[in-house]
Amino acid sequence: MNNSSYAESFGLAGRVCVVTGAGSGIGRAIALTLAQAGGRVAVLDRNDAGSAETLAQIKGLGAEAAAFHCDTSDEASVASAAQASASALGNCEVLVNNAGVLRPGPLETLSLQEWNQVLAVNLSGYFICAQAFARQMRLQGRGALVHIASVAADHATAFGGAYSVAKAGITMLSRQLAVEWGTQGIRSNVVHPGLILTPMSQAFYDQPGTTERRSQAVPVGRIGRPEDVAQAVLFLASERSAYITGQEIAVDGGFTRMLMGLIPRVGYERSAD
Image 1: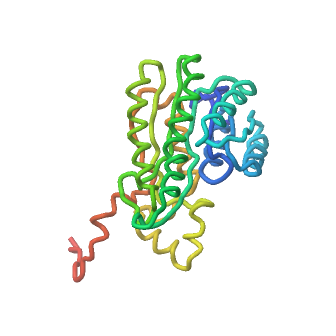
Image 2: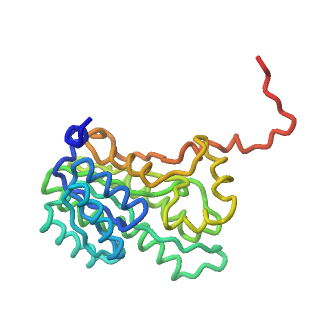
Image 3: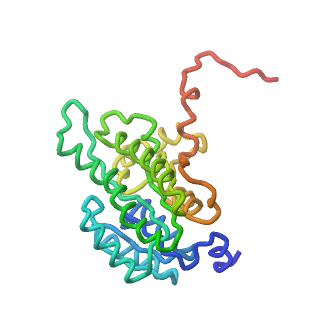
């Protein structure tokens, strides 16, 4: 399939796709994937250097894009980015809520400031962006919201601070948006990444043996890549998922289905027949 046919097959050609936290990692992979599918991409991040690199890679594909500084936890910053994006590229039709932070620590000693910092970006920021960009979607009569959460939304991450709480909140936020805005032509879905190697998680994998041990807990036998998540986002953003809303997709290589497989089976031998 040539590039033109590939783009046409997703129905995203010419549509404005806004990606938050697009300056690196999963956000950058999503921005590049949507651009390859014909989208006109607005790169949002508070890391201007990262945004510039993502923008350069998108333009290297021959796609149309623009980058805007944005702190998703700040309503005024989001409003400014939304206005600038609409002026440069047109009204948003796809929003990918991806920007996130991690402030690990035990709940026993976690400060309220650290708790609030995570919720402000990882949950409230999703709500702020959904509100702002959905106003543009209504002008088009259609739109797709795709929220990046985590398998931690359903599986508590010990000593992860407010991370799991925020990710669980994203799931319910998406469901409520789907119910309230469905009649306005706006869909809302969630992608739950599992063990994915990104700049944020790199420190974990720098520890000797971590990659090998974690890979053994994943049925497909490897740690995920940002591009794996991006492909799921592409599906939910595109016309291929036109009748899907209020749903969640786990992109985890089967990791969250491994509970029974982790039970020790000492002396167990599978029958030859």
